[in-house]
Length: 463
Ligand code: ATP
Ligand code: AMO
Image (tube, rainbow, N blue to C red; front, side, top):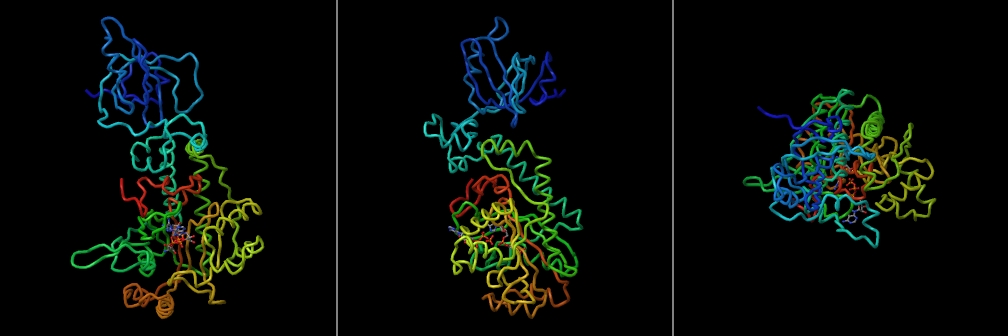
């Protein structure tokens, strides 16, 4: 019969009992006839002791145990005893296992590049000039990601990543949206031709989808009314920055509009506030865990979200001394500067910029009917960095073709997409969110690679 394996997290309620559990050797310390092991299951740890005893536990057994490599997986049987001086911690458990039997389940056949403790040091510890330990830099972590991911911080980061996806899905499902799955192999670019990956496709070529833009709009033409997708987005941008990946997870949505594109903007705003509040309410422990390694001021938003027009935003920058001629677009540096100005004036880390100049937006964007140099489009920001782009779309095929021509996109290569609007299509709009950016900025991780399991950038395709 199968014996039940115990969980470290519940052992405090099994004092006096014999338990059987599988765990990793987090650390081990041999001292003559005794070995002290710290055993770990995910983020939970407990101390276990093996003491040489005549007839029962031999000295070679103790020696063998003390030679186990950190990160080995063992099966342990023993009696749980109380500890005299309990520690305040949610993950270090206040009991001790007196080991009677120990078996190796899976050992190491390579040397550990760094320990979990090394990888768990805070940024401040890493920067300390007199640091005496192994400093694990980001590249080393990413090269050995399966070990790096075992830290409490990473376990928490990816729980939070999953939480953002669930909160996104649950909110939209509650708002009457249908989840879709659009193809990632495309016959043409879905955004600008400059940033598309071309792959060989039998006797010809295909392109990796740079967004579900065309498909999600076509679903509106097919009467789905409200759709969303969580799926990979590919960008052939040679951008070696803290916030660009070549493959990221896109959270996209598209919806029919009744009267005004601000219906979409309001829905997106409600969605974000729900995500922020959900994270804060349900994932306090994870946020605190990450905060110990990556200290961050608490993410702040307002009940009434700050909405600036592009003009108002650039005016704030001009008043702060940025030359007006540098503000045809808001570059990364000015974006961050604006974030700081907004934070100082309005005490928020989250805001919206509406009404971008048409010249800055893609061909599918609806021009502002009152001033066609502007557009019905918006970007959302967290801590002064863009996390969402969206707009009302052009649903009139003639205007769409005109927009394409003026932006250097060949309408002949997008016939199916244009045709989708020839059979009647409601006015509609939507937006696209970068999941890793939201996670990075909420937690202030400072590098998008930390928010991606196995990040892909211009210099990294492995592991
Ligand atoms: P989008 O999501 O709309 O692409 P983005 O934030 O990725 O938004 P981009 O237009 O790709 O925006 O680039 C925005 C900014 O990123 C640019 O203004 C530029 O400052 C910066 N950037 C892009 N590539 C690089 C690079 N290789 N090195 C430094 N900065 C870059
Ligand atoms: P856009 O190109 O602005 O818009 O992308 C939407 C959001 O995706 C994220 N993002 C990225 N994240 C990581 N690495 C990248 N290289 C990267 N590029 C973009 C950002 C950005 O705000 N079709 C439109 C969306 C729409 O209008 O619905 C689009 O793709 O968070």
